[in-house]
Image (cartoon, rainbow, N blue to C red; front, side, top):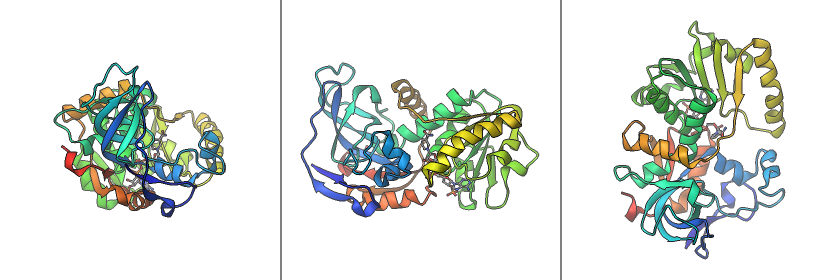
Length: 328
Ligand SMILES: NC(=O)c1ccc[n+]([C@@H]2O[C@H](COP(=O)([O-])OP(=O)(O)OC[C@H]3O[C@@H](n4cnc5c(N)ncnc54)[C@H](OP(=O)(O)O)[C@@H]3O)[C@@H](O)[C@H]2O)c1
């Protein structure tokens, strides 16, 4: 099969399209013929091994343990391991794996759900990491309630476009923060109000929020906590990850700053749970969330796709169309 392979950490230039053996599923895995995958910032962090902290999390200190990349996967099951009970050969599925930039990928049974018939493989491939992060950030960490005023900073990216739609599905009043070129798109996915961060700092406004989901926490947290109501919750999803030291410092300092400001602040790492994939599948099926797809690249152009996402201004999601004859 064809796959995008790397043998060392580095820029997208180290990626090569190669012919390699088809993987064999373990007992609790299925083999999926990949129809589509999507790109997340995680892919370039794993590709570069940056920040260095990521290498200490079991990915390999000097050389990457994983030669293949690609977490978000949608496709059709070709074979099942002997302990797999929920899925059968021929099922159309989507979920999270570790090697989706390839024609075939092995995926754990508990990281998958069936694809809704009315949603394409490409749309489903957009969902797992970004959708689950938005859902867990708003519901589990942000304790979102109907009628609340919710602000999504970085509303135009992968996590942000899902977060706006999920917050609306929970009945919130949503304000999306993005750059000028994305204002209309963020409104079109359901934001009640939009703020152009190139013209206005959301923390300088008189408006206060019950919940802030921050996908682009580049500003000082001391400043942005001002936009929170006294009992509100500030959830940090992503921000400046340029060095391990910065990340470690912010993990120590941000809670102290929040404590002094008497505001609640949470940082978290999303975890792929089948029950959350099921939840998102139902929102997809009912049309309550519709993935925003900015661009599609063929498998051979994964390096280009990652270069694009690495710039940090993706509009919704970037898709890798692996099997274009099978994308419905
Ligand atoms: N905690 C977790 O478990 C977890 C999970 C997934 C992702 N993340 C992190 O969360 C962040 C967002 O992920 P993503 O997949 O949504 O990334 P993405 O698709 O690349 O989107 C990033 C968005 O940030 C916006 N942005 C850039 N600078 C901004 C600023 N100064 N103010 C407001 N918005 C700004 C961009 O909008 P414009 O183009 O309009 O500037 C872009 O839409 C990343 O840092 C990622 O690594 C964390």
